[in-house]
Amino acid sequence: MWNAFVNLLFEILRQIYYVVGDWGLAIIVVTVALRLMMTPLMVKQVRSTYELQKHQPKMKEIQEKYKDDKEKQSQKLQEFYAEHKVNPFASCLPMLLQMPIFIALFQMLAAPSESKPLGGPLAEYLSSNSGVGSFFNIIPDIMNSAKGVYAGSGVIAVIPYVALLLIFALSILIPQLMTPGDKSQKQNQRVMGFSMAAMMLFFGWGMPAGVLLYWDTSSVIGIVQQWFTQKAMKKATEDAEEDKKSSSGPIKKKSKKK
Image (cartoon, rainbow, N blue to C red):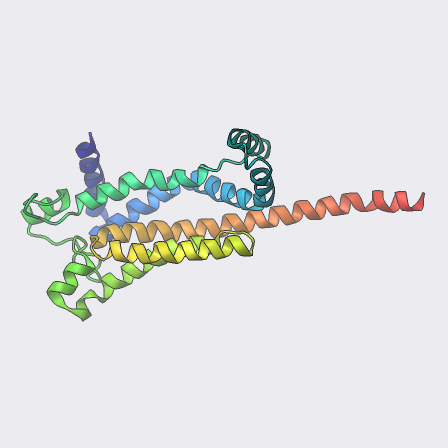
């Protein structure tokens, strides 16, 4: 079943390649289409994270109050989530949905090796058609990694691959820095963001450029969606607070007159 999924993804990619004439661009088109389909989930994720951060002080109170009774603490937190319509697991869903695509692309773009002489479906297709998968010659070989290019061609040739790698690391860091919270929470998010970005640099060094191209495109779209959604939610919260103040104002004046 998994091989069928990998082959299906490759077939979709190949059909798009016939239209756009570039393998890297075909990956970007597939990524944009997937992100557009996932937009409702992405908006839900950002809203859930925003609401969790907004209610963090109250959640800490509940945790502190029932710290000696974990069962009661869990029950009260669940009641709190239901009351405020917050799902703490909503932020994980878009990531979980992307992981199969990420892994399938990794396998599809795998270069030939001792264990798999033909490589992934794209490598097999390109070798049988005497072609190379490139991204407008900016990335000459989307199946190669920064590690492989550096070892074979040196510093100059690896620069475009390193650029993809840096965007890959920043795409992990920036959403963490954008997440709202108090000073302590932002400090924790900053530390976590830099740690994860450093880890991604390490893992990304050996990843095929096509996989990084997919992740970079997906993350840039996600960051833009997150920025607009957070901005809209912040404005909605401010408007609601302003309406609350303006509606309570006359009542206060009236009671003062009395």
